[in-house]
Structure formats: C-alpha cells, structure tokens
Image 1: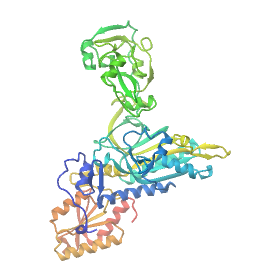
Image 2 (image 1 turned 135 degrees about the vertical axis):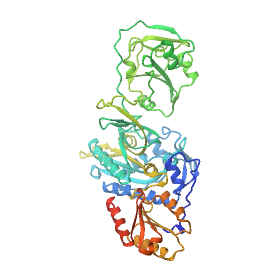
Image 3 (image 1 turned 90 degrees about the vertical axis):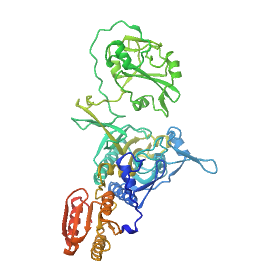
Image 4 (image 1 turned 180 degrees about the vertical axis):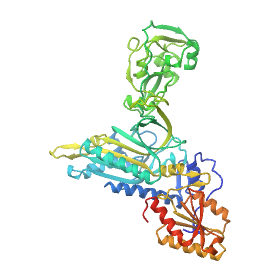
Length: 570
C-alpha cells in the first residue's frame, strides 16, 4: 500500500478522551475512530490487525479439529427463556421487538443458540465429540464503557462450544482448548497467565481466564510466589488467619455513642481491627442478606452472590432497609436478633474469640461475642484475599497484580443442554444430555492488549505475526527520482514475496514520515535516502535503536531472517 493513497490520518496530540496507552495509540495511529460511547469504526489499518489476529485464532482452532460456523447476531427471546437467562442476564442485554411485538436481543453471547443447533443436529454418540466456533460481533450495554475497546458496547469475539458424551470427554475438549489458547496468545506476542475464575453469568462448574498483566487492567489477579497458583480476585480462595486462643468471656453491651466505623471503634475500644466483625447488609433481588467479615477485611460480592444461589441485582441495603433489619441506624448492625433472609459468616469470624459486633441498637455494641454461643449462620469463604496472605495451595506468599481478561474458558456441563433438551442417544440406546464447554476470546481486547505490552513513547511496536504491515519503506525525498525508483523496486519485490509493505511516498518532510512510521509500528523500516547513490539503504527494526546501512540486495535476506526468527513462513 502506498501512503499517498491510504485512508490513514495519524494524530500528533493525545485525544482527551483516551486514558490508557492502547486507546491513545489506536486513535493516534488511525486504527479506529469513535462513533458513540463504547462504539468504534475500525479504519483500514485497524481492520488489518483485527483480521490478522482472527487468522491466528482461526488457524489454531482449526488445528484442534474445531469447525467454523456463523450464527445470527439477532436472537429470539424464546431460546433465552428456555435456559432461564432472559431476565437473569440483566440490563447489559440489548433488547428489541420486531413489528409483530416479538422479543429479540442482540447477542451478548451464544450458549443458547449453539445448544439449540446441537439438539437439532446431534442425535447419536457417534457424532461426538464436536466443537463449533464462530468469530462474530457481540453486543453488551455496558454501564460504563471505558478504555477504548477494553470495555466497549460492541466487540468481536471468537466463541466456541464443545459437545461431548460424558464429563471425561468434556475434560479432554476443555484441555485441548486451553492448550490452543496458549498457542494463540503466544503467537500474538502476548505474555498471558491462565488463572482460575468465577463463571459469572455464563455458569458451569469450572472456568479459567487468560489474563494479561497490565497496570490499567480492570481485574485484580492473585499469584503465588512459590507455586503455580493463580486466580482472579473473584475466585481466589482465602486461608483463614487463626485467632489466638482465649477463654470465653461474658457477653457485654457497651454504649458507643456516635461510634460507627471500624476506625472509630478501634480508637474507642483501644484495640485493633482484628478484634471486630463487621456485619454488612445487602439487598439481593428483593431479599435482605447479611455477611460478616473481620473488621480489616473486605467482602467478596461474587462469592456472596454464588453462596445465595445467584442474584441479578446486588447492592448495599438502604438506610431504611438497614433500620428494618436491625432496628438501628447504619453503623450498628450485628448478628444477634438480625431480621434478614440469610446470615453468612466468613470462616475467620467463626474462629474468632471474644470479638466486638454491633448490637442492633443505635449507639451500642456488644463485646466478648463468640460464634455458636451468641449466634449462628452459614459459614464459608466470603472475603477478598489480600497481598501477603498464605497461598491456599502451598502456603507460599500471595501477590496481587492488575490484569485484563483476553480469553475465558468454561466447563458448562449440562447447564444448558438439560433445560433445553439437547440430548443424544448413548451406546446403550439411552437419551442423555450433552456435556458442553464454552470458550471465548476477545479479538478487540487482544488487539488493545498487544499494544499495551508492545509500545514505547513513539508509538506501537507490532509483533510480526499481527502487524498490519511487515515493512515500512520511507523515501527521504520523494522528488528525488533515484530514491523513488529504488523504493518502488524494493516495494514491488517485497509484494512479490507476499510481504505486507507500506511505501511512504508522500510529499512530506522525512521527520514527519519517521514519526508516522514509529507511530504505526511496522516491525521493520527501510529508509531510502542519499546513500542510494552507493546502492545502499538504511534497515531498522522497530524494537531496536540500531540502524544498519546495507546493500539493497541484502534487504530481502534481512527481512527473510526476521520471519524465520519469528517462526513465520513466507
């Protein structure tokens, strides 16, 4: 492609709306343009990158034996009603009606569609295992679109669905997809970690996320410094810190006027936060649920939702709801005499001795409270793990980093096949529900994550495998006939080698062209300048400061060597 013919308007200034590097560079390099909040048009340069990523995904999926399929993006409500998710999915779903008032949605995900296809087409165990995938646009009405395509309302996803005869076979399919994902992200030049994850709205028995470490990531990712344990914060298992043994003391009611917060209580009782158990009250789909954690801990709301069987809407109870549950103002809630539908007690609290809680009376707390003697509830792990805690696997030290999810795989089991009647006839002639797996990759997010990991102050540094152009040719002076002739010859020969090459033939200053070349980020740059009179050009790798002056004929060998070094066939 010649830049004089190219629709590519680079930007010098950082757009005010762009908060992170990938968003800034995708706009500045002309990869995309904003159309509405969370909705973007991809320009020719950006589309080439998306297609290159898709091709990597497609090659590795096909290598596993998966078959590509394409479903409609507009889905009838009936399928979602069968699975029970039409209302459970929540306000993120774009809903619409046709002229006959029939309900539809724009697909946020496609479990129901593929399950419906399977129940129509799969009749016998002889057709199994089967894995179908598609690369398609999804729609989710995000409450707060941000960070460009990291969290947008329209995005491209590769979603695959496996169908097996039993759990053991499903495990094989799941592991095969996990291995394929590692290869995909390695080929895209991403440093990715596979971590345990919560299954969320998709559901199923088990899931794992592929996380890219990033300072601007939206998720907290937990790692052990001694073993391979890694999990999303929502899923990370905590190890209770055992309290010192104490003789059980007499329960006391203490007047605590205008003392509500843990900080105020610590000062009032002249002790530390570990001697308190705070009781937080939530509204979950119209029911009141209380959860107790140690005074210095934070509630993990995902664990809370899972413990109560899932909830569409979870939020902190209003002051009025707190008053109804406790007969007290906010800040004095406790477990004794609490009027709620469920009381969840974190493992740590159940093992504490003589601790302090709210008395469900404004201006009062109880001290010397002990689980079982004074109250009971549902015991479990309901808090966030913290930096420096012990690993639940090996006892090593936990660290926490920010990360961005680029892929997610699920063991769905029969969550969709059973209620939707997606059955097959087994070897004994008996009908059984299909065992399913689900596997997603965010193509747009993968693109943005590559930029987050591969950029410098001058622009993008594309890995060769996904670069929109492999080579950028800069002509120092386009009015110089000898320079232009040599550049055209190199350009045409590289195109004949099936190399994607960008020729900057614009009538611009050389400095402008170099800045655009660095911003766009082609892995290799050839500069045709005054050395052309000696039959030489400059050769530079985008990720290196070194500039080599080489003979024109050597250019083709150097480029071929880069492809070999990156294990890419020409």
